[in-house]
Amino acid sequence: MAIPFDQAFKLVHDDDPRTGMAAFLGIPLSLKMDVEPLDRELNLPTLRTDQLFRCRTPSDEFAMHIEALSRFKPEAIEKQFKYALAITAKYDLPLHSHVVLLTDKDLPTGPVAMPARRKGDLRASLRIRFTKLWEIPASRILRMRNPGLLPWTPLLDTRGDDLREAARRIGELKDRELSTELLLPGGLRYGNREAFLERINRLMTTEEILQDSVFYQEIMEKGERKALRRTIERLLIQRFGVLPHRLRQRIAAADSATLERWADQIITAPTADAALT
Image (cartoon, rainbow, N blue to C red; front, side, top):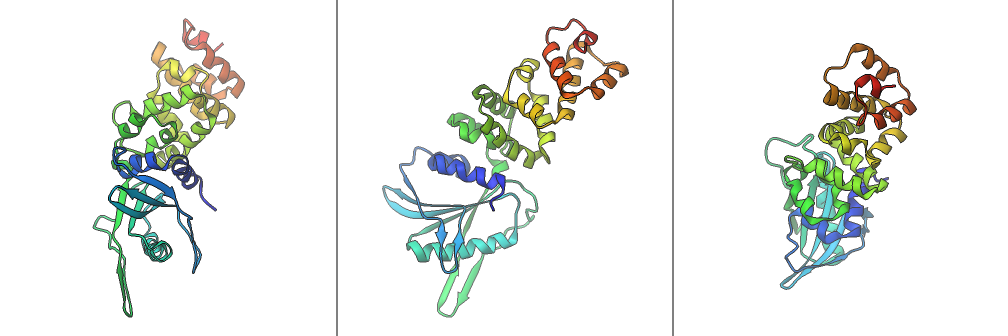
């Protein structure tokens, strides 16, 4: 069964494979190339790839195979070789083999050995093209104006306000599905969803956090009161300075309904005590 971020990655390419290739593989949109999805099921033995396409340019035609890994796995590189053999046997096309690494977890410090095989008269080797998402500038995705790519921003090389801008755009769309998809890569990058939500809250302004946004709804509906409590404390400090211990205790003891009411009051309250009434 596909794990959530794998499925989300597949959906990006299912909806618009060409811009997905531009975003994650660096293949410019200016290159004239038709992309046709190929059957991902490869038999004898049965294998199923993450993504497999027939690509045509004015001067070339080839198969493009893409696998996404949450962390580096030596056995996945061996499996890439098996995929390559099956793909070329089924389609008889030149092959471009890509592995997209979502994080740098378990990445070896030295070069990765490329798989090669010699069986009787058969000699085969494979060049694998690695894409490291954390080295791709997030600005590339932001320039494309494709909402389906925005949830992948946390795994990219974010500079300045890139992450905040991606979150702001998803919030403006009021798209719960995109918000959920953002939490998957965000949790992968920062350890868990709560840590990612706290990171988002640190980047957003008071007004952006307290608007009726998808992120705010996600926090409430998932019962993540801890993240909301920290957000309220941060906003109160931003407006009124250091919080007395008694107010911190009041925030820690509050239920979801009370926290929601206080969140609505912070912007206009004249004092910290008034915000928590």
